[in-house]
Image (cartoon, rainbow, N blue to C red; front, side, top):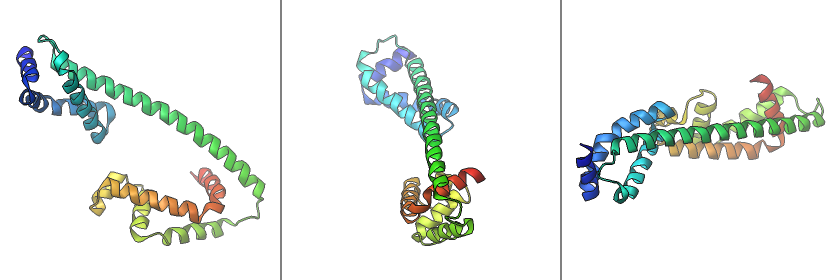
Length: 192
């Protein structure tokens, strides 16, 4: 069977299409098992098919395309997980350093600089003054703790739209509350 599949692949796009149709779903299932993210899983599988297309002329007639694809998807998933783990470690280290510097900044301000309730009012007002769509998305994300995908489904928009609203909201809030950010971060770390 693999000889025939490989000949179809080498003979042209129809053979490649057949292979794609035959293996796409099983490969997505495998990739989803590793990554637990459907979109990332599909992207890894699509990358594997791109790689197959790029090397199709170099494959022997005896090549086992199924094994090639499954091994490629598995390895790419594992590499992606390793990169995420390294990135997570790096972000944790940066967060710790940032919290340390913000704590130092906060301690230099003095305890009578700002009352907690006054700060809460400033934050509430800044959120209330966000553009309507940004405010709704921000509140769903931060207060209802919904994921971007869930927000997009609830509002009938794309995830990219949700991300754009969140980015805009955070930029506005950072700007409106910039003089209070060290205090906000330290308080958030204390109460979380």
